[in-house]
Image (cartoon, rainbow, N blue to C red; front, top):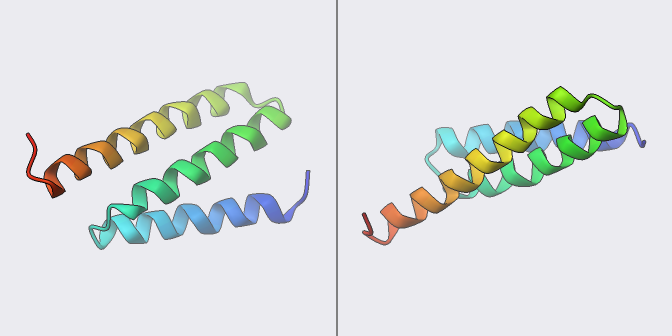
Length: 76
């Protein structure tokens, strides 16, 4: 696997954190993309427990995206 890919995912994860600190909904989208990438990396390296963790993180970031969207549009 290309060594640049994990560094790109690291950068995306940091960008996602910064966006969330700034209360930007797009942070969740960035996290989702990064988490999917981390799932691929971990499965490639046969680190299945960590891949499972990133599957959960992907679900949580998707949930965050949906919840923040509801608040943005005034939905309960």
